[in-house]
Image (cartoon, rainbow, N blue to C red; front, side, top):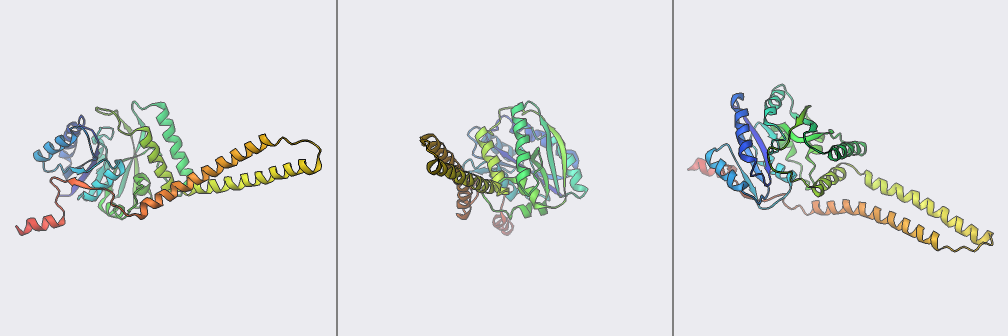
Length: 320
C-alpha cells in the first residue's frame, strides 16, 4: 500500500493540533492509503510539544520533529520534506485554513499523473481588504520582474510526487521562497482553486514583519530587477546633475544675476545622496544574502524526532 506523507509546520498551535489530527484521520481513513503525519514544531512556547508527544505515543503514524528554536515557516517545511518518506508528500498548515477535506482531490489529481498539485486561494474568509489587496499587488509585481511564474494566490498547501521532493531537496539556499522554488522546478503541474476558511482557533503567527521579510525573499530570490532599477535611476539622475551643472555655469558666466545657490545645492545634494543610499541599500541586500549563503551553515537543527528512524538507526534495528 502506498504511503502518503503529510507535512505540517507548527508554531504555538496548541488549540488546533488535536482537532487537525482527528480531521486528517477522518479524511484519510476511506482513501485506502497508509499515511504519516510529520509535524515540525518550530520552537513553540506553548504546550504544542506536549500535545505532539501525547499523539506520537498514541499513534505511531504521528512523527513529530522538534527544532531547537524558531527557524521560520519555510525552513520548518523544508525540514518536514527532508524527513517525509511517502511516495507523495502533502504540505499544509495545521490551523484548518488548508482544509483536510481537500486532500482526496489532491490525491485524485496525483493518481491522474500530475506530479505537483498546487492549490490557489480564491479568497480567505475573515481576511481584511488591505491584506487581500496587498497580496494581489505583490504577485503582480513579482511576476512583472521575475522570469519565473509565481502563481497569484498560491499557497503552501500542495501535493508533490516523490520525484519532485527529491529534486527539491537539491536546493540548498537559505532564503527560501518555496512557492517560487516549486514553480521553477518544473514537472507536470496543475492548479486547483479553493476558499480558505477561518482559523479553527487562535491567531495567525505570521506578523507584518514576517510577511514583509517573506515578500523580500521572493523578490530577491527570483529577480535582479531591483539592482537594474538602481542602475537606471543612477543614470537618470547622473544626467540630471550634468544638466544642473550646465545651468549653474551658464548663470555664472553669461548673466549678471547673483546666484544664491544654497537652495539648489541643498536640494541636489539631498536628492542625489538619497538616490545613492537607496542604491547602496539594494546592493547591500543582495550582498547580505550572498554572505549568508557562502557560510554554508545548516538550515536547521532537530532536537528530537520521535517515531522517526534515520538509515543508520534502521540498520541497527535490523541487526537486533
